[in-house]
Structures are given as C-alpha cells and as structure tokens.
Length: 310
Image (cartoon, rainbow, N blue to C red):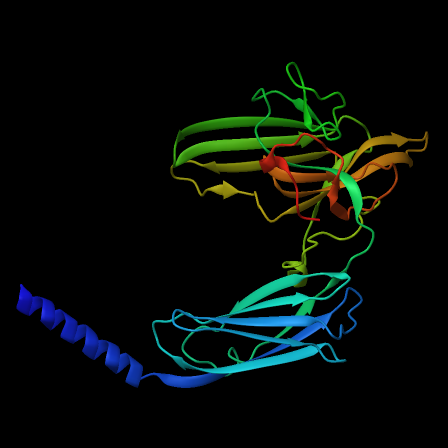
C-alpha cells in the first residue's frame, strides 16, 4: 500500500509538472465603452474588470475617458482544463451601477480574448415611495379566483386583510411525480382598462441596478395572462416562466364614456407567478416606477418580503 501511495504521488507530480511546462501564455484585452440611455459616452465612470480562473484572480480598476472607453489587459498562462472569465462592474455618482461578464473560453482565440463590450449606465431620475413587496405564495384557494390588494399587501378573502381586488390570481396544481405534473396560473383584472404586459429587457440593460425603464407605458395592457409549467410522459415539457421577466401593469382604472383613461395606478413586477416582486405607484396617473427602497409604503413586512431593488 505504501509503494502504491508514493507511486500515485509521483504520477500526479509528473502530470502537474507537465501541465505547467506545457502551458502557453496569452494576453486578454477588454475594451469597455460606457454609454447613457441616449447612447452618449459617459466619462469618468469607475470601471472594475475582474479576471477569474481556477488558479488566477486579477482585478483592474480605472475610469473611462471623454470617449467613454476604458481598456484593461493582462497576460496569463492558459491550460486546457481551466475556465477563463471576465467580469465587469461600472459605477458613477448619479447613475445606477451595472454589471456584466463574458467567457473567454478555450482554446485561445484572438477575437474572443479581445472583447469589446458596450455597457449602459441609467441615470438616477426621481425615485419615489411605492407599495412594494416580495410575494412567494399560492392563492389561499387553489382552482378558484382570488383577488390581491396591492396597497395592503394581502389577499381579498376570509382570514386576510385585503379590500380592493387589484389583481386576480387563479392557480391549478397537479403533481403525480417529478416527470408528471402541471401547474397553471391565470392572471386577470376586475376593471375594464386594467391589465398587464411583458417588458423584454435589452441585453445591454440586463446587469443594471435599475432593471426596468423609469416609467411604465401609457397603453398596451392586456386584461388576461396565462402561465403554464408542465411535464407529462411522452410529451415535451412546457415552461413559460422566467424569474428574470419584467411586467408592467395598470390597476384601479377609471374610463370616460369614450373609453379613455381618466385615472389609473401604474406599476411593475419583477419575476414570474407565483414568485414575484411588485411595485405600485400610489399617485393616480403617475407612470413613474423608479422605486426608492428607503420609502416603502407597505409597513409590517417580514424580512423575506422586503424589497431592496429599485
């Protein structure tokens, strides 16, 4: 046993030494361009470029020039068993910070190892107090429509505190096994003019501290939304849920005799049903959805229900 142990150590040492001596050294160079929401260059933005592998960690800091560009580079030994990745973090006073990353990959590729990326910094506009809450629960009664009061943060049914049915959820659940299940959620609204719509986030905004636009759109709201996640033997699985999804919604809408919106409350949702964070502007006809986390209008929330993202 002792001979076998030392033989194993010898083989590992030889292989490790061979890997080290056979490594190639290459340089990566990242060019980062920082722009605002109008596509204009942002100068003097703080940039951090992190380089991560299984055996090397480097962080390079600097600021963008008048053209909004910052360049970083580093030479490193490359091995065929190591993953190579760059991470970016951009910050500037008066803007929401943003993050991004990219894989350099192997084998070495001169194009992939010299990436040029454009990252967006959104300006801090007018953050406001909103009704905001993280919801991670099913309706109290499965298979039945149950209203949710966004200003109180609770269901509208016996044993709960909700009063106004802002959004109505109806969920069906069936589960026989991990390969045979079906979950459906139907989202509807009680008033004509109320509704919801999906916001498709551009890739350039994916890492922004403010994931949504500053304002909700004035129209385009649909009165119903259906979600499904299912799997059945012999059938392809379905899953149209996305934890990174964003929705806009409009509730408590009042219309005139011509169908024009006279009054409405606007908001946004991060996540998908039935695990989501909602934000509701308290002021009628104000489409601002830029939340100030220090001004949550919902009190008495549990720690896991509190919202810190704008």
